Length: 463
Image (cartoon, rainbow, N blue to C red):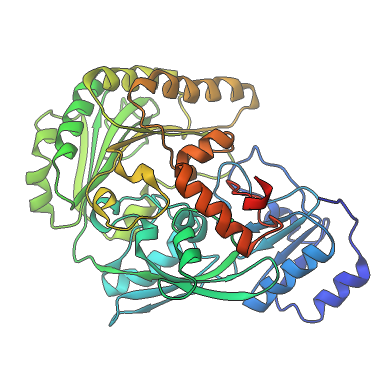
């Protein structure tokens, strides 16, 4: 891409029709607007277009192409690789497009392309409805869903993309397109895991589900008790009903009532079990874990929106994430997972996570481009730290874990959980057939690869 300087006349022309805010370096609000979740990303767009309407998005994209600039599309800004920004180009900022409207009769929600999970949950909670969302409230709905969308409720309601009923997007040539199972069906298929490769999505229509009760159990053990606890958690989730979800993680224990005082600020392990039902039923289901006498625990019904924000990741840290799907989790793999936790940076917000899949994730009948849905387990080293001197150590910890678990990996990967790890990982995420089909769809909707700041799928003619 060219690094042409900003044309003041062209910018003033854009301002005449643009209803949002246009920010250039040095203007009030610019610095805050360019800041991302991952503090390792420090890029300065030549222009930030804070859009308020679909027309704003189309105008901004047209301006970026006129200037021959690299174009980035920002939703939540939570992705580890920082692909929602650019150095010297255009950031199309969707965060003001965050309105969520709920239709309780049809159990659907229309969600703005810049909405976060907090926006979605706040709108659905009063109706006792929910759909699968990210595991923290600050995650953007758009990037999360377009990458597939694994969350606390996925074993019950499927992946986030399984609940996508329709989408509206602006393509690289400024066209406004609606897609669903009947209209533009190939594009609709591609949005189920293909990421932001095909345009800037300005709204989603999502299927919601009744959620009368949600129980969360947080069970804390000391690190030396981790292997036994993980094995019990594995055995429980292997045959658990769809109502059961959650994750097992090593983390720096917080100063909370459910954590023994001597563990606060130290390495601990946590089983977070979610149950889409009342507390008494949940207690019966998780009895194999509570009989291990965790050092601390909290078991209670709570609103889904509260669960979504309980483990919110603090912004401003340096980040490195990666992931692998596992086809099996024998005792030997459990030992590798637990032993590697000692290499985490403690204290820090880092998490060393094991997520279950199965249930509705595995059984969904659709043939979307996400073959990783059939793996029973996902391991996710999620590194956050503050000192640049710890960069090598944190990255080494994550990579070592995945290397040592290689005998049990499925070969596929959930792209939302990783940064830019090369073309082979992209192929692994989709499989050869799905990848080829995605490149062909890309060639129809973005032949110039304008939307390349993502886990990029190049147009077929570019392969």
